[in-house]
Length: 350
Length: 107
Image 1 (cartoon, each protein chain N blue to C red):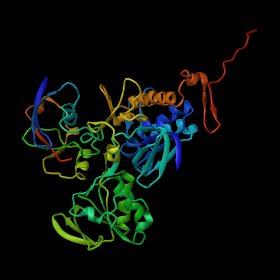
Image 2: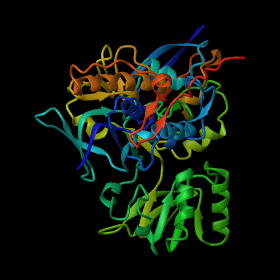
Image 3: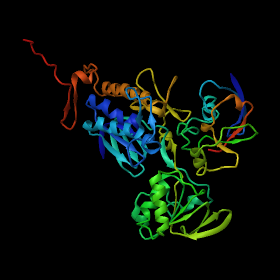
Image 4: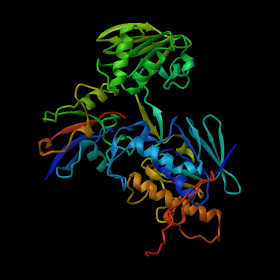
């Protein structure tokens, strides 16, 4: 069982910055995220796009903001449970929580901060009849373990970066890689498109365009796919079908936690501390709603800061504390490091 | 000045809405401002032509800005695409759009 002071759900910018504000108050954090990497939308959707409204940064690439946040929170040694979704929550008699993921990882925390953005990212599933029947029986929406495809025949569908990147990677793993896309043009990074072109010439990737997978066949698992290639019907035998049509956010299991939901967002007490209707569970960043709510990263940072102060006060009732300024007090990391401003030079002039 | 746009939501209800031409808005943002689709189901990527959650069908003959490469490529990966599909986030609201009729594509 993983134990922590604040369990954060969502490793986007708001979730990451929470670690910093909590760290200043000597509270330890652990973060759960459905994606395999930190950064949430910024890393998954638009890492190379600039953001212009982060105070103090006239322009910062989304990916760089994530890197900077990771650097900023490093000394507070956050724990991460990545590639797992928070599934259930149980409130114990002492007011603490146990949150369990879809893979069964248990987390025990004194407070829970939901910083899940628009929700956890789930694959967009193509509109193919019976596709649900074949899930985990040859249909895979993510490449979690490339070894699953070792020496197998695979068909990847999609026209973006993940379809290209996985085709390239699996060309050396699978026995046969077919990439199917509705157009002849792909919208991935230029070097990925060129690499696929090379592998196609080398006979390592079989490119089928403009085409679409229209059906799946097989008694117990995927055996073949129906294709429509430039209007003509055909089929291809395969062991695996990997549709990669991007991700879409869903509130998911959190919607069943008994929280007050309004317009796909969690209602919070914004006059005080962004707590939800359940004491000890907070919602910060894009996932919450209150009168006047703005879905901005900078608002998420503010909400995280106020929430951490509230958690500290609840966990340490009556304890005297005044807000510290990092320039004055410096930062003491949990890893033993200390950052502080240089001392002023006091010297007489002869 | 404001223009009038007719938008059929995903439930089939037709809304005739007034759209400002001086607020640098696009069709996706217009739908959000009138709450024609639940939050989180439209404009998911914020308007970068990266998610197709604002896909709509153009129902009448109003001259629209030409489709850019980003939009074209995204529609090549979206579902429920028809020959009159566009991404709302890539259509800025201008006076030329007065009288436009749209239908939101399924989620």
